[in-house]
Image (cartoon, rainbow, N blue to C red; front, top):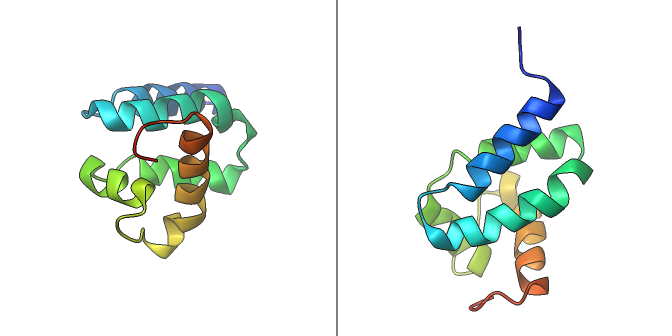
Length: 91
């Protein structure tokens, strides 16, 4: 039996807050808390795939220091905008 939508959201929230680097915890954790429930099914699937990416790559994409893969670009833009709204240093 697969996981329910609620279980998937809970898992993604947990993985967002427990990344391995504090910087990505502070970027992805609040984004997950505030926005995951509003994402479409396809956007949630992209976010889940994004969680498998390396933190060092993710932070470069969020900071705009390197371009993310095209499939993640819209999602990274949303995450970066959310971080800027929260006035995180460096964004």
